[in-house]
Amino acid sequence: MWQKTSQRWILAAAIVGLVVLGNVLGARHHWRLDLTANKQYSLSVQSKEVLARLEQPVRLFAFLEKGSEEAEKLEDLLHEYDYASPKVSLQVVDPVAEPALTQHYGVQYYNTVVVEVGNQSRKVEPFNIFGMGAGMYETEFKGEQAVTRAIVDLVHQTAAVVYFLEGHGEGSLDQDFSDFRDFLEGDGYKVKTLNLATAGTVPQDASVVVLGGPRQDLTAPEAEALKKYISGGGRLLALIDPLPRALPQLEGLLGGLGVGLHADVVVDPQRAFFLDALSPVPVLEYHPITEKMLEQKVNLVLPRARSLAAAVPEGEKELRVKPLLRSSDSAWGETDLTAEKAGRDERDLAGPLNYALAVTRAADEPASGEGAETQERPVALVVGNSGLARNQALGFQGNADFLVNSVNWLLGEEQMLTIRPKAEEIRMVQMDAAQAAAVFYGTTFAMPAALLAVGLAVWLRRRGR
Image (cartoon, rainbow, N blue to C red; front, side, top):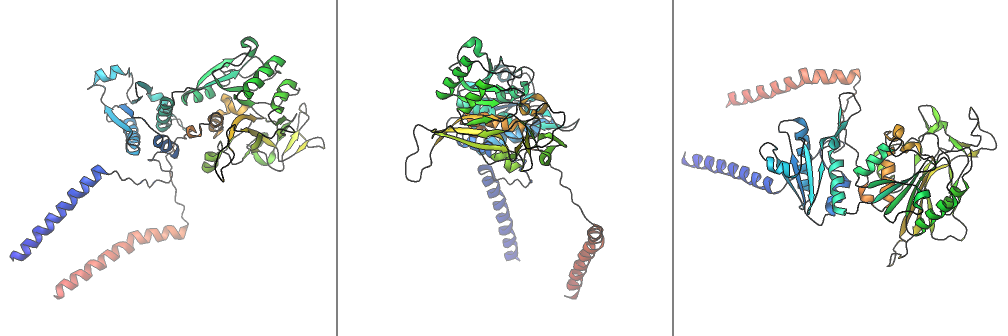
């Protein structure tokens, strides 16, 4: 009797010890397993790469409205940052209980996050975190995008300046490209306009110059200013629409970079967007700009695009021109831009045709060591369409990602590639009649019968003792 009592006490003490040990280990080591198909509750690879490169502490202050669904979702996300890097610390703040801290950071809304690096800080407010979803009453959670962008912006401390050229009928930065501008500013860039006719030269702080759908040609001094800027290490993003007229100065500028403009508009019935063959959905080629988009199977749409030719000038050995977007084999380049209805004839260009070309130049200091690859510096990205960057089409699947990724690539900031919000996925199970019957009879009759049989067997065994 005494021996049995001792064994029970020892067993109880062992169970309690295991529970205490499990809690201690759980408090010190955060082990998490996200079983959702799209890793909805985990940080993206981009965010983890940014956190892995941190060299200085990052403090996150979350001013949350306790009890709200939005606050719970945001707090869960911020804990992921805290778990992912020892450089990140998180402080959850009740704005009512701590008004002094709330006032210190100028927080006006619940569910605001303040990111602080050194003596610099940046507020991420609710409208940066929660956006409109696909449905009327759905919201899109963009918290990871906003917080990671804020960290990158504060850590780099080099807000690159993107200039949009104007004066040649380009799209307006305040109207046509306002959404594109907002995306760039959300990634930490400064966005300005540039009129070369009055400025005379490209400003020294220009990181990238954007040519957004010019309708008229550059003047010779303007083209010369851009050539000087590019030869001095500047980067160019050129979005050139089909036009019924030639642009000699612009064509000369791009020709020097190994890019030729075809005088056509591409017709691609095989990859048409909603049966509109003049709005093709291009095939993506592998490139750092398109890598993530290929993984996520995200498409672009190019409303009315011209084709481009890769034509590196003879004797130019340092330039490299790589296609990024192309048409299907059955597409053609319609050369009669005044025709009311496109029809293929012998004057048209046969597919596949290029929509976008990336230009790089061999770096001045090549990589050393056996087997090292030649280092290349981004110079320009030329797309035969500006419609993808305008507000009407920017929201289509990967258009915004492609453009922001392009600017990041031009600046050598691939780690800043955009993070797409993770949608809550509803997974459906499709069953035929036989499968549905098996599930019904299995759960209604077979499983209860099995449990009853086990119970009966146990009862008979005990009775027989």
